[in-house]
Amino acid sequence: MDSTIFTRRTLLSGGTLVGLGALLAACGQQANNEAAATASAAPSESATASAAASDAASASATPSPRVTRGYSGNSKAPDGEYRKADGYGPAQNVPKPRNEPAQYPETEEGLIHMMEDWVVAHNYGIQTGNCSSAKKYVSESTEEYKFYEYLEGLYQRGGWVIEGLDSYQQEGIPIYNEKQKIYRMKIRVFWSIAMYIEPDGKITKQANTNKDDDKFNFFFSYSNGYWKIIGSGEGDELKDE
Image (cartoon, rainbow, N blue to C red):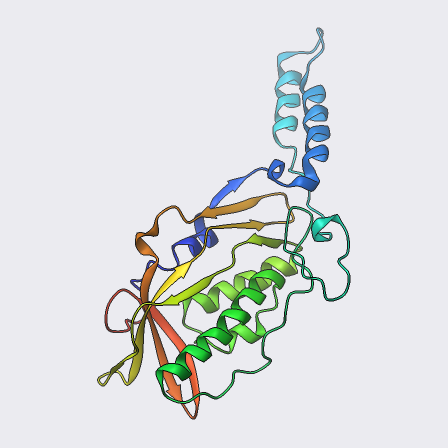
């Protein structure tokens, strides 16, 4: 796949890991752990060099404190009140997407309506880890499908996502590729920052500082009234994923 649209998805293999101190809920716990590590690493006057080395090794091996997923805002939101994710926990009362994709005509308007539905399902998956609806809009071979599998695993492990939501803007009309029997349409993605919280205290953080790769083609199939995203890229033809 030659698209750079999923540049931020490289977090799955090599994102920037930062300490637990970035989480509001964990600052006090981290300070306590650091103090304990410092005390245990300080050797007495009679300690031998080997004992001091052992203490230092033990201190360096101290694991990061685990994150306990709680409620965003540090409290349970009232029923129906949407609350975005933060350092305390994932988003609450996120509006649910359609259970099943809707049928739309094979027109530009129909394609746009499908995309609107997909974005709701996509962002719901990011905020909840429930990607069952979003998966129905994309092919299993796409990077987005793989991203949904990552999200499901992250939430199952006890992690969650802060920010990370996407929006999309149409940049061109749908063009039919007679050779491949598929459509392509130029799209621009908008996102700013994403933080992926692991229960072991690690955070993978990505920021959209380079806007040059925010415009790309989405490729779509159409069958029996249903549109589906089957790939993305910078070229005019869909390449093998």
